[in-house]
Length: 197
Image (cartoon, rainbow, N blue to C red):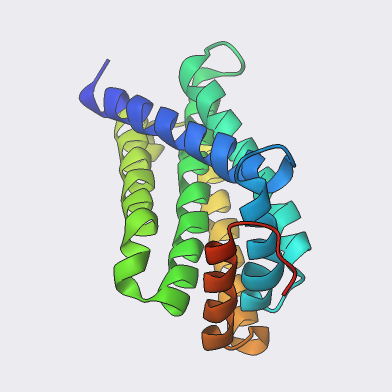
């Protein structure tokens, strides 16, 4: 096992637990400790930030995080679920997809709270996701993959880029004022739960 594989396994396990167990489950499961905080945050801050209904954003991002985290853990710790190279390609896609999600969260936090507050945790998590992806690419380079698996990774990168671009366009065209959203966010954080504004 190479150093890149070991590093990606450690980082991927942390990322899978964090994104699946905290971000994903916290946005979806009412008894989760984060649910009471995440529901109003998505509804009153994240959704309006992008000019979209907050609950729809939560019901898209929550399952995405849960699925990505679970697949990360399954892909790293099981073998034989599928062709080994296909599994490696999907792990690379998982790292890329999570990197884009956290990059969007970074943009959100920088816009509302400033760079200093956004560096931790978003900046740190982005570095973790990128390190994971680079390590996976070191373990399984695209040029060594079968053409269909390498193309799948490239296509997924294109889809992620288009999603990121769409989110930025929605923010610019339909997003609410950052100062108002920051006040809402601070109110929700202060009261620590599902408070109607």
